[in-house]
Image (cartoon, rainbow, N blue to C red; front, side):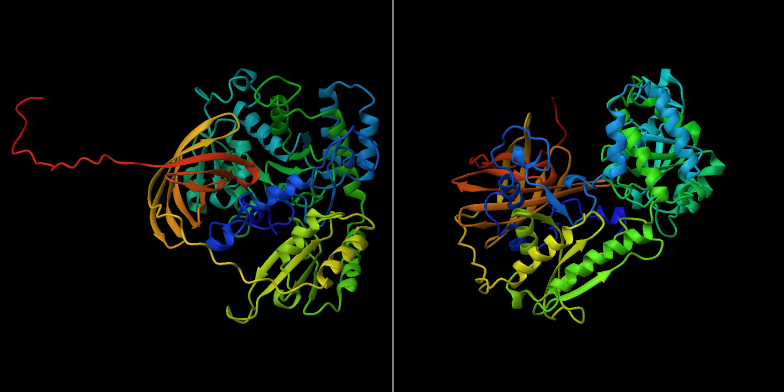
Amino acid sequence: MKRRELLKDLSMIPLAGGVLSAAASTSAAFAESSKPKWFQQAAAAVSAPGPLKPGPQIYQSIGVEPIINCRGTFTIIGASIELPEVRQAMEYACQYNVQIDELAFGVGQRLSEIVGSEWGMVSSGCAAGMNEVTAGIIAGGNPEKLIRIPNLEGFEKTEVIIPRSSRNVYDHAIRNVGVKIITVETIEELKKAITPRTAMIYMMPGDEPWTVKAVADIAKPAGVPLLVDAAAERLTIPNIHLQAGASVVAYSGGKVIRGPQCAGLMLGSKDVLMSAWQASAPHHGPCRNNKVGREEMIGMLAAVEAWATRDHKAEMRTWVSWLENISKKLNGIPSAKLEIKEPAEGALDNATPTLTVTWDPTKLNITGQEVADELQTTKPRVAVGTGFRRGQAAQSGPPTTSITVAAYMMGPGNDKIVAERIYEILTRKRSAPKAEATMKAPAAEIAGRWDVSIEFYTSASKHTFIIERQDGNYLYGTHKGEFATRELFGNIDGDEVRFQSRYSVPGDNLTMTFHGKLSGDTITGEIDMVEYVNAKFTAKKATFPSNRQRINIPAGRPLST
């Protein structure tokens, strides 16, 4: 799966991978308790903390239970586990002081020797590196410009072009520099969008027509640097994106390469990367907050050194063997189908073998999401992906449900634990689920305008609900926020009211689920904002003047004002 495909729905629930989608049916989206289920699970996962105790139980000592990662390199669950070589290098690096510029130049030179790029730079994460590259290009090595960022008044180059297919939440790293983003739909639009104000083109590697080579063939003759975001990709030596014409390619250190999670790897043009380094800590300027430590710099170099010598085919065989062990344990479970898929030859993004376990939920009386929920909330905790679909032959076919186990972030011995956990859950005797309870009759007709007050952590905001139609228990309308208006849908179950809206713009999605109690002309409750946690709200139904008067049309032009 390509990184941008993972970004299509930004309302992913942590760990299990369930999605609360505005496209889902209202009853499915809201048939939960008043508090979001994932929020309850997260709260339940943390017990009373005690003093920190270094050792194998370090997380448990402060009340946090670790997770066996069969999901992927998601930052929210800690991404990858560092290689032993990386941990050893960082342990030595932290025991000595060093001049950081000298270290950066030494690391940059060594990275170039390993990878075959002109230069290399370690940043405090992939997004931080992209931020620094953008600032470096905008300033062009001129510190007088550098210290003015994000005020770009008087700068010659202030625009960054991004293909729409590459717009994503991480391009905030580009936007934060203060540039104007020019979004283009086609290659022809890209050609026309390049002007003397164009500072850079940013993209994720894509298929035709948006290949790195196709964009580079346009950018290079125009003298425009091309930044390629390959955060979740496998590192290629020699680097295919640089060979295709990219100026800089950006990787996440804490994903497939298994370096420090708080490190990014930038490879490419020495001039561009030296300008980027100038913009970053330890220097003062716009990217000082993106400080990278000597430990991360050495750890990232150690990860690349190890990558260049690792037996990647043997590693893949080991991952597949773990999935085969799990598959053997699960073989024979009624209605369960087991499929191990290896990544295609040359696959780069999130390239891992996976085991998908598919079954008929009416036979085992449990869904993939329910299995994932139990795996993530009971010990030992396991994070897996989930799926639900109808029969492939026709939409009216029997339903199937599934979980997916990704192998590349598992550790030795995890396969046995994961196999036992999944087997126990799927073979447990359970009764058929009770039919979904019908909703109670609505406590009131609530169509109309509602003035909404929202309390965030440190601020308040005024919003408006327009409930345009109430069809029994179901509600339809619009949600007007401070900056945008979007569709609203929901339901009323007795006096329990639930709404959901989604605000989508290029590069960003924000889903808000309102759940509260109706009392008279007031609804009070909480808002689940997925990765942004929650807030409180109070909605009051708007009242209008009761006086009635006829509106008269003036007979002619006014004689006075």
